[in-house]
Length: 340
Image: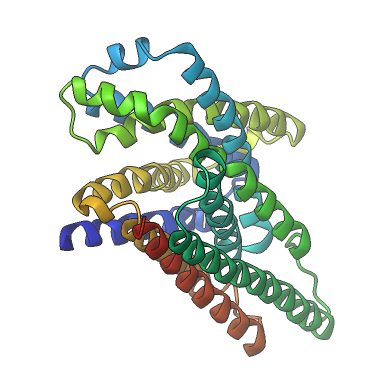
């Protein structure tokens, strides 16, 4: 149990920190950084990880029914759009706020999806889950309010100092994060559709149970990566950003972005491993630990990197309250699911 908890925390830390290296790239436009990131995290890393880790890789995916490929592919396509919008939101409103609103939206919708697919659970489970959803929703709303308050604080300081800000609109960034979070729940649907077949196929080929997560992520990441590739090829041409890859910082930037890609992918695989170590409580307690650690890490790292240095104490207090609500809500949802 202790090992599982520690791995869940570590997985959450990796997810919460994955976008942090982006702050330290130099000479790259948004399009350069994120196109290279998505190329690595959606294709290079998952292909290498899947081929190396999954015994019987060719047989498992070669025999996967066509209808499962189609369902996973279409829902993963939506997930890819959502993750792409997440990166855009981070550039508008920062790591801490973009992360918490995006993940909060996924938790809200993701907690309701099983009810749509499988029907309503027992009353005691439903009560806890609905209470938890309301608490998470309150946290997301407070985080949004904190962001808008921060924007007003920064606008006031800019007016006093006669300076301008290069940041995008806070309202636009929040909307992008929310819509991205809604689309990103396609990951949950793809997982639900593909997991039964892949879990059995993985087991039959002599793999450990946690390898199922690696197998599930392969078609999801490849399918989601297609939309991102198309979008960023268009953007690199439209913004004439191809030439920005020719910078003296290319080597350093590549290492930073590779770290982002590995952290982003490995977080999910490590969570699956943690869940297997936690036994029956893996998908409930582990889920709470994973998401709590990731959201808290993203917000703390955003604060450390001075995203909120110009915000008033009021804005920061609202942010802290929103984070607390999200953590409490996640724990309540996990506890409720554990009563099933």
